[in-house]
Image (cartoon, rainbow, N blue to C red):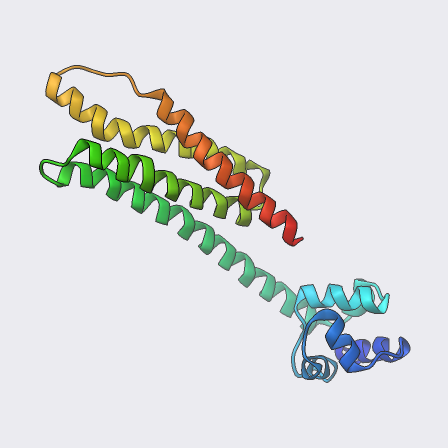
Length: 205
């Protein structure tokens, strides 16, 4: 028996109408009808919701329906690919903004140090760090995501070191130590953003 007939049989055994089921799992009645007639397949989230609603095991619903299993595998792979792409875009966007911020310091002649410090080091980069960390906290699954806090701290330190500190070293022909307060600041900005993103993710579950 295919999954469409199984879903229809399970619904009728529970004396549920298609309208009732549709309202319970947040889809249209036509969607329920399409699933039961095998015009379309439900996604994995909907299959789990139907399994709970009908008190039928997932194994019973999916057993012997190779097309449905293949569909779920393919849709899961698509979702994973999209998630990986979105994560890559998040990190690349941060890196591009960070790189442009450093390049601007050297590209713009007679850059006002005070203005650059306020606009870039104390407004732009902290804001970008906060937002990026929040997105990571919300979208990244692994517990290792908290290691990104160290990454952001190092990047913030490097932004200062490759601009003001490097300019000072060139001007006075000496080597300066990195400003580790920037490391702490970068970690702080990202830690707050990460925590907020993680909290939002937990609230949605």
